[in-house]
Image (cartoon, rainbow, N blue to C red; front, side, top):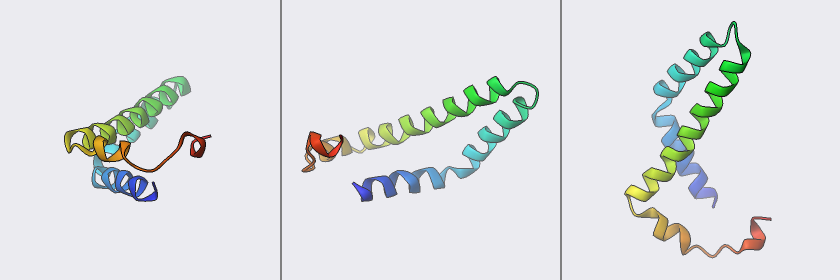
Length: 76
């Protein structure tokens, strides 16, 4: 599981220019309205997490993820 998290973080680091630009827009737009900045940054984080999942799906990595020896008790 640690390797999968490292892979996701490395994917995000590769797109750090886009992430920083989007966060900059959120901060500049949120100078007068903090609710805009909060919603915008949360939306950016949601899009990033979905992009890592779609990257796994495009490379047929979900089949590998579902075969890992992880039980439901480890998530609780």
